[in-house]
Image 1 (cartoon, rainbow, N blue to C red):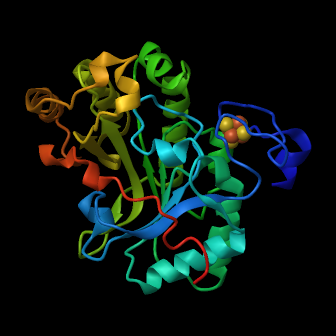
Image 2 (tube, rainbow, N blue to C red; image 1 turned 30 degrees about the horizontal axis):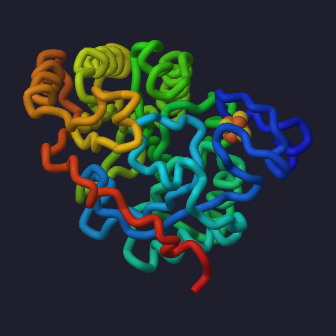
Length: 303
Ligand code: SF4
């Protein structure tokens, strides 16, 4: 990242201004992309996992650090190996050879320049599967523009409508405003959802909202905003899979339980009342830690 090295990293809204070859910013990422696991993943929406699994590349580090993060072991930068962009492109081909339906770039926001380089390299070498950018929604428009023409499907979260909630749980008062602009940019790049004959998504935007315990009203506001703004141009994935994390329970006792079925049902009823048709909903059994993969470095280094 020569540009970021010269002027300091301002890739994401945290705007740290650090030289990542010498210091860490909020994302805890260094100068080279770090990956904790690259393997087939079967627990995404059906149009992403399909029958053969999504080729998920889990990046290390994260700028957001939500207090309830279920991937903390990698988002805190504890696990993962630094690799080159050439190796990243190679991983895409290895996952394709294992049968991956697509390449699912999970929380790579702080590595956008490296990812853009690897995607362009892979396409030049004839890679044809869709690239999915699976992200927090906390991205700058400028960063997202670096992915233009390279990403097929954006899979962002829209976590919070209320800035006080985003401040409380992610130390990011600006999350709602940032995410709204980021979603506009994603929809500008991928204005319509396109599926193949098997129902696999080839292009478009799917926005996820994870229902947090006791926070049905936040999720309702998110759904209303998304439906009013984008209608049927996007799909909305309404997640019930919130899994309590022990380390958050002390400071945030309200987060120490799973989402109740009655809460999720209320949210789904509301979505129906709004007229949302392009949606994915989950079984309550999805709140199970077995959906959290082992971040054991699988597939990261050359065999
Ligand atoms: S990508 Fe990391 S270092 Fe750069 S601005 Fe964001 S948090 Fe800071």
